[in-house]
Length: 96
Ligand SMILES: [Zn+2]
Image (tube, rainbow, N blue to C red; front, side, top):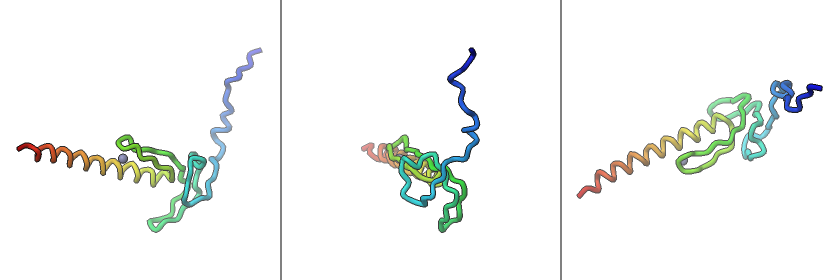
């Protein structure tokens, strides 16, 4: 018998992601689910996955829609880049 236990049912890959009806207050349990529709003052987002990301510079963590996760990462990147330029400027200014 050539039965392979490790074979994964590929149909599972094609099945729809779990739906999350929340529009705020996402938790770790929601990561990987999908928000069918999310209305914001900036526009309406459809089929957004909920992701869990963190900032590699300061360790802040974020759970929420992919769009906001991008903003989170971009925001932290900007902040820490600014901090670095400030620190460099300060070093130069410290020379007596
Ligand atoms: Zn950060």
